[in-house]
Length: 110
Length: 110
DNA sequence: CGTGTAAGGAATTCTGACACG
DNA sequence: CGTGTAAGGAATTCTGACACG
Image (cartoon, rainbow over all chains, first blue to last red; front, side):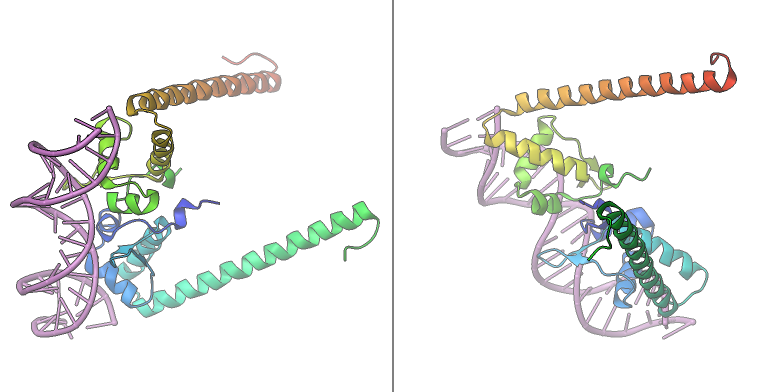
């Protein structure tokens, strides 16, 4: 999969245009560990569309008065629940295909 | 649809990193009408992932010795054949749904 | 804590031009 | 025709710091 959404290719100026956030804020959220841009060879930050979406969620939280530390926790929680979901999904798929296999083979899978 | 692929957000330096093409070449292909970056407020060029893919195709053609004018023709031809395909597809879908409608209603669609 | 700002330097981007071919 | 390069200016980005609160 090419995954344009995850590819880090957008400079901070464009991120500012797209989100309305000041460059200062964007850099600060990185400093606080909420976001992790890649770096080009000469050190300029590069963001993905996914990063931009996250930044907009962060901006919403901040407007509600939520502190960056809180937001960071939420992000980590969300991330781990996604991993969990993916693992459960994988588990179900494996079960499914094992069943299909055993039906086809007339015996249980190895 | 958000269409990350078509969104023009990538600066020429990153395009250079991604394609290996010199900035001179990238600008020249624009001058010849092969590619159409957007511009930021202060005039810096912005490219989409789609543009980058097209640039790589252009680079291949150029390596084969094809002139920019030829390449431009190919691009236009490809574009119009896509439009044609889309129109035919739309036609088929319309026909399909008209049939389904008339089956459900017991009469032909308006 | 979160954000603005002025500071200075380094890297980026732009345009129009000359070169070679 | 297609591309490199040197030129000069304008805009971008970076870091570390001070300010306010």
